[in-house]
Structures are given as structure tokens and as C-alpha cells.
Amino acid sequence: MLNNPSRQYWNDKGITPESHYLNRRQFIRQVAAASGAGIAGIATAQHLSAELSDKDKMYHIPYHPLSEKLYPAKRNTAYKVDRKLTPKDEVFTYNNFYEFSLDKDPHKYVEPFKPFPWELEVTGMCGKPKKWDIDELLTAFPLEERVYRFRCVETWAMTVPWTGFPLKLLIEKCEPDAKAKYVRFVSFNRPEQAVGQRDTSVYSWPYYEGVHLEEAMHPLAFVATGLYGKQLPKQSGAPLRMVFPWKYGYKGPKSVVKIELTDERPHTFWNDAMSAEYGYFSNVDPGKPHPRWSQSTERLLVTGQRVPTRLYNGYEDQLEGLHKTVYKQGNVH
Ligand code: MTE
Image (cartoon, rainbow, N blue to C red):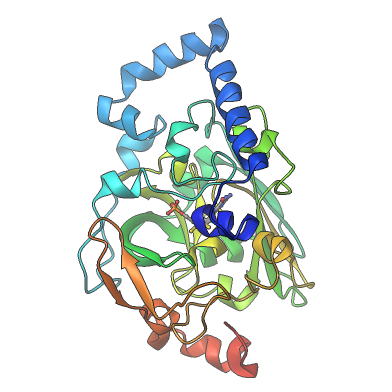
């Protein structure tokens, strides 16, 4: 992937290839065009600005009428991390969200993106498929806050308080068929709102991911709707994203519109794009180097401190069930 490493992929000398440079210019032109939105857009923005604080606006935290009731949710202290939270200014401005930018700055391009209203379809091999309206989903399960480690395959790492609910609760509601073995996720596809999606020459949109059903049902697997005690900012994956803290960050798709139960192992975005570099399981493993860099240490955001990477990102002792089922064949990194 991704950002600087992906530039190396395109051009080993580290020089930005012309096609990338042109794409960036195109991005900028398109963002400029989009910001000249029509009267209706301006009226909506004025309405919302009455409800949002300046800091929320700066961080692109979208307005939702239920936000004040839902956030901050009570912290579940069973999920602790033995290092400090990463400052939110960094977490909200250092992101990977290729639908908006190939660099770490998607927050500069998310303005046109509208995470509300939103619909999440849960479908496929299950007894009760359903299209969830986001308003219903936000109140269907009790929200809780969990502090998790987060490890990107590029080696940067952070510690963040997500708000949300266990993915298991949502999957149980759809009553998976006995034959369902995998869960597939699909992110939004709105080229008119996401400047990176207007350029399909590099990646094939929408973003998609997948895990085994047992992984999705694991108590650590989380649907995040909030971050730092507020609604998720747009660049962090509003209105909802998946979090699998023992896997590299790319396994957690942002701004998801579809969850599908299936008996076929799903294709995944990065594996399809560069199969030699990004596997299917993608469980964090300090002993398995990426073809272009070591995974033995990780770089903490803000301080830049390098610390040893932990197997399964420090969650190994909670994965016993998966070791007995999905991971028992080995080769899961
Ligand atoms: N989901 C979508 N839809 N698009 C993306 O580009 N990037 C992934 C993941 N989910 C990505 C995505 C990668 S590579 C990482 S590391 C994390 O989101 C980054 O999450 P963050 O920006 O909130 O830290």
C-alpha cells in the first residue's frame, strides 16, 4: 500500500510518477468544483452549522440529531491498553481513506461527503436480511466505548477510544444460515461525493473486505460509530466502520453500506490490488515482514517512538477460540 510505500511501488526511486501527479491535480480541481455547490447545499450547511461547534466542524464530525444522546457512551473497562491514548488531533488528521486521497490527508477532501442519511444492508445467506436505516441502527444496540490498539500495515500505530457495538450482535439479528462461512463488507460508492472515486484508473471502487464468520462473531470485532466520545468524523469512516484490532487496519472498511453472509471466501480490496503484498487474513505478526519493510516494530503516532510489534497486535490471549477453529491450519498472517 499505501501512501508513501505505494509510491515506492509505482516508482522505486521514490519520485512521484507523472500519472499520480496528474491525478492529484485532478483531485484538486474536482474538489474546487464540488465546493461551488448549489443553493440547496449552502442552505443545508447553514442549518448544520447551527448545531455543530467550531471544533466539530474543523474535525468534520457530521451532525446527527441523536449524537448528543448517544455520545459519549460508557467505557467498557474490560478493554484496556497499556499505553496512552493518541491525541485526537492526530487521529483526525492522519488517515488512510483512498476514496478521498492517496495521502494521509483525506480530511481536506471530505466536505462533500454526506454520511447521513445512510442505509446499511445486511444480506446474503441468512434468515432475516434487512436494510437498516442508520437512525434505527444507532439505537438498536447499546453503545459502549472501547480503547483498542490500532496497527496499520505501513507500521504506524495508535491507541484510540472507539464507540460502537459488537459486530456479533448485528450478525445474530440476521440469523446466519448454517452454511454461511464468511462475511463480506462493501463500502460506499459515491463518486460525486468522493473525489478519489472519480478516478478509477488506480483502484476499483467500492472498497471491499471480508473475514471468516467466526472472526466476525469474535467479541473483539466491533462496529464503530463514534470516536473520542463523539460521532465518527467523516475521514474516520462515518457513519460506521468495522474494527478488527488484531488485524492490520486495512481489514476494517470505513463507511460501510453492505454486509453479506456467504459460503465463498470474499475477495478483498488490497489482496486483489497487490496479492504479493497483502494477504487475506492479515493478522498482525512481527515475524512476517511485508515484502518491502519489516513488521518487527511499529511507529507510534505523534511521538514517532518505535516499539516492538506484538503478535496479533497484543490480542493473542483473547483469540483462543479462533486458534481452535479458523486459525488451526496455520498460515494465517
Ligand atoms: N476503508 C475504506 N473504505 N477505504 C480505505 O481507503 N483504508 C484502510 C482502512 N479502511 C480504507 C478503509 C486502511 S489502509 C487503514 S490503515 C484504516 O482504514 C485507516 O483508518 P484511520 O484512517 O481511521 O486510521
